[in-house]
Amino acid sequence: MTAAEFAQRLHGRRSGLGWMARCPAHDDRSPSLSIRPGRDGRTLIYCFAGCEKGDILRAAGLEWADLFPPDSDRPQRRAARPQRPQTTAAQWAAWCAAFLGGKK
Image (cartoon, rainbow, N blue to C red; front, side, top):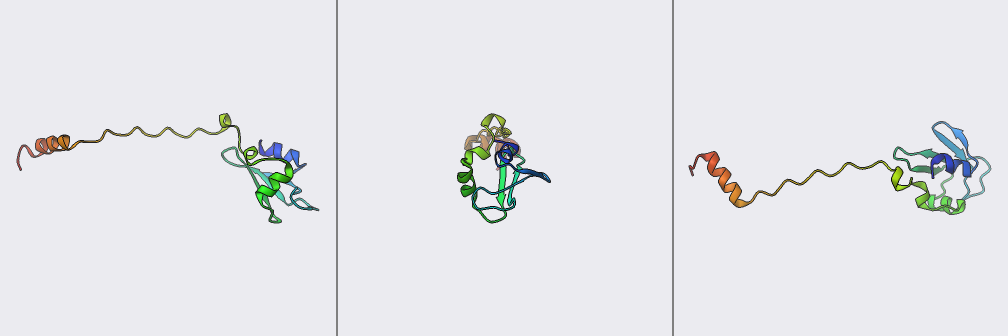
């Protein structure tokens, strides 16, 4: 669920880079719940009255997974660099001998 969809669900109003809505976890007279899109597609929520995020989600009938985009929409991480092969003792000995020109 996007931040815009979350805000729409709670009848939020646009405010700066996000939305403000009445927090469903407490009796809210004026909007105290900040809703913003995160850089990686997550929906970021914060209640200025101090409600826990889990309480907000339960009151809205949502789960933690709803704050994250589907796997196909997430930015992909870079692939790990391939591992270099380990140098054996025999290879080190051969390299040292070649470097030193056979001198010990």
